Image (cartoon, rainbow, N blue to C red; front, side, top):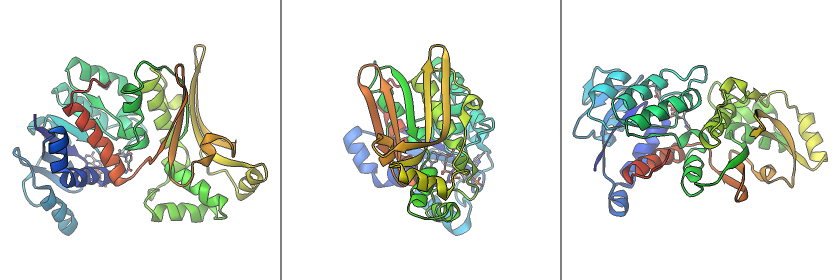
Length: 342
Ligand SMILES: NC(=O)c1ccc[n+]([C@@H]2O[C@H](COP(=O)([O-])OP(=O)(O)OC[C@H]3O[C@@H](n4cnc5c(N)ncnc54)[C@H](OP(=O)(O)O)[C@@H]3O)[C@@H](O)[C@H]2O)c1
């Protein structure tokens, strides 16, 4: 069946998804019999465009580049009205991540799922603060709530463990889950100051204008919370993760690590010891022989300790327009192919 998609938020990820869908339209039809229409787009900046038979995406991209708003097919709907009134049967929630309480994205997801519309999101807010509630609602209404893009963009983590690794138990997870800080630490080791490395990360589009969520460790804290709750079935609260970022590390610390054949990494960890959940994000000096020490620049990596396979390490991109657009596509395809994930 042709998917009718509504996008909430039309920034980097949504535009990356559109680029992929446009470029791969024929390939997706031929290889997976996958067909789609993007019927609605709502964005706080650009307004709302709606056509129940499918929008002309190339045209809309041109409009926002030239006019900074949608010109054609416009309707006066906010996000909730777009979810309720459009004929979309899948909502891609791609608005901003709020790490205080996950809103308004949680409300968007709840509204969609209550109306028996699937939700695909890369927004960490709903995944951190309402994963279990939203998954339960999705299950009750026989639709999917899929969140692959929230942890390592399109590098498969959640779907890999839920899919090919089904049957395995994850005993602990330890990883480099934030590309911006890993890039900064790599550059500091090459001799750059923290400020210059941060500026370079911002120039390359890795870090936002306000880098707090990255450099203070909150982004990695959100991701380890998601991994704990989704893959280890724990009840870890975001605020219970002990968290320290990289802002206190100095050039002297970096030099000391070098002298010790080691390297600083911002490491996120979760493990269950007896009844106690131990979860943290903090800088760790890892020996160069450690598998995570070789992960450089903006690359992410996660090592799962498992009961049946020993250590499994996944390394790959953790952010980016096309990379995260692909995460959304992979969830859309899994809905299309009726894979029984989550
Ligand atoms: N970019 C990545 O590599 C990446 C990777 C993994 C996960 N994610 C997550 O995926 C989501 C989208 O990321 P992005 O990079 O595409 O962000 P982005 O470029 O900032 O785009 C988000 C868009 O949504 C709009 N928006 C904000 N609040 C909204 C609301 N309440 N209703 C409707 N539209 C709203 C924003 O408008 P304003 O600009 O006016 O606020 C912006 O146009 C975020 O939650 C992000 O954390 C991103």
